[in-house]
Image (cartoon, rainbow over all chains, first blue to last red; front, side, top):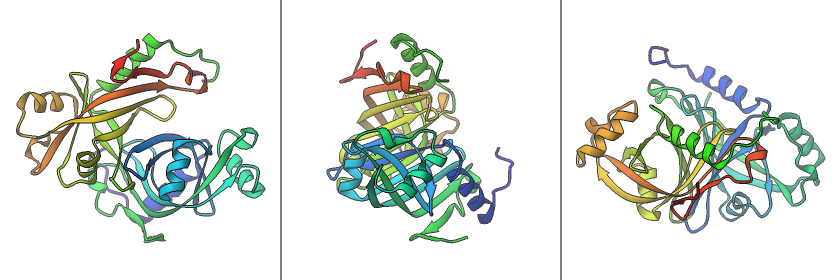
Length: 151
Length: 151
């Protein structure tokens, strides 16, 4: 891998969008409690209208942390083909309350949470997106800053 | 995968230890600031004397969070063959200050941090270890609790 030249920004954005829209892809979701306890879980992802959407139990640590702190850091891909996203909670919606959102989620994810009592969709707005493979891709890794694509 | 029967505890522990000792493996490290901002990075892992060892810049967010909160949640493996570890910071050591630790780290990781100024080893003691692949492995996923292997 080390001899592969670094991808340019446009290629990284295209690869990032391809990863975000992959059917049945999981995302690592790191959240924090207000008092500084880290949490991390893998969740099925859908990319809907430039937002990352996951479905969790309303009582889960992830839902509680996000409700309290509004912020998450998410990772997609293997550790050497990474997309890292800092995101903020835009809204939380009961899984039966927004049919268009649920249909979009189910179309990408490999399960349907609508029959799971107490589940919520958490809709996360990316603020910063970074993508890199090996060390030679650390320069130029930031593709979105302050919610705006740079490429 | 759904028709594969769940592994028993001994098999999961063996698979977990095999993953922890894999050469050049990366681990996802989630930490939190004292005020509840989540961080997440992939880092090269070494498993040394039942501890998880990573090397980071002393000024990095991960080092600062762990110094402040003493706690991390780590994930190994792809999202559908997961080892999840809740761990506490046992010690932080300059990369040139403990030769035995450095040799053990370098023997497993695919780089040598000793020439990187300002880098530290963070030695993390697992408190809870869980391992699962698909939904049928959610029962029995806890292999270590309160720092003690259950299997």
